[in-house]
Image 1 (spheres, rainbow, N blue to C red):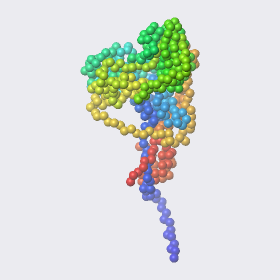
Image 2 (tube, rainbow, N blue to C red):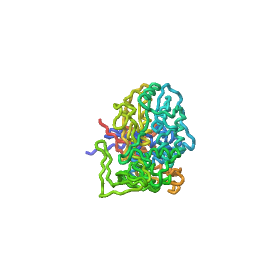
Image 3 (cartoon, rainbow, N blue to C red):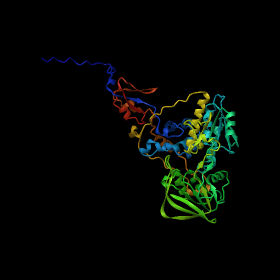
Length: 546
């Protein structure tokens, strides 16, 4: 006999008694994850964070976050090779974020408003010598002064800046910008000594005796030469010398027709400077145009300005004197790797001849390693460990002296890295290896919350105005463009409090308070909907092993 079912029991209570969390096999977590741009940045800049402040309109706070790692935002925003943009998740969605131009906007805002660094509150007894007033030395001096250590900066030239001043033309890096960002560092209390040149091991020993620690950022001051050219000739000049003399307002008179040899940024600077001095310029490079070491925008601007590019071309020899006749041949060039030397293969059956009045070479530079014992050098560099420490006790080194990664931001990053380790050593601490977290990839971003938008085109002065005035070529973003571009940032790995996880959770297992978001483990079934709807990739689903 069927018995009647008892009546359903209704309650006015909650369902909190039903702890459904035991059903799941994985639990979502909110994480502060490093963005791909942060991991690619040589100074480990907190890019997503400062762009977030710029997006909210707080450029002062954006600048404060930016200069924790890089004291040169206005300079970096003009000349950095921006590996952050290459790694940007947005590049796989529409176009990479214009990080470099946003950094320039923040840096320029700081210069316009006169924002300065705060001097350290308490002076510490440790005294550090920094040798070299280029970007790496200045970066180290800045980071050490911020931490309260006494810093004496020794520089051979009459003015600070290194290649920033004597190797990068004003039309790329205006001197008012360069001077202002250097002065801001010196005003922290850096004691500057000009006219100092290291001539040998005795100089290093004296520095070490007078200071607690030493950071060497001597640069690479020995230009490479080509065997096809004589050691010296009235028509031959190193590109570095040409740029330095132009920077001092003493541009050499080379004649009408100039050939520049090289394919990197320095070669482009030499060629474009010669154009501004009234020369017709032909640039010879071993590399094909698509493989030139120079940045694509530099090549584009050089071509716009009338530089004739003979890519995939090798010089065979020079004859004559007035005019010079340069014998050239077309080649296929493959750069060397760690295990193999460069390879050059002549293509075609014949060559061609170029007439010229002068030749400028810009094929790279070597560090002067004669100051150091052979046991301390290798591969054309002073050897250092991952924290830039040399084999000499109390001596660190960076920049072009210790690395073939010869970019501005790499030099700044090495100076910062060395300063952090010097600070640890002065405090008597032990090295601690920080764990490397995984950055969110594009597939982890809920891209449907980010409408596709193009990055702004780079504005430039008209060519005629560039050549006639010498003014800065690349134009700044407008205030409206800054806001729009900052809004394109995915903020990868950084929670923006969008509330998606809170709104979409079917179990009401996500809470949001002053401390951020939390997942209630007793109720979360591990469905992963919150992770799927996260617009920044700052939530992950972790398997639980019971």
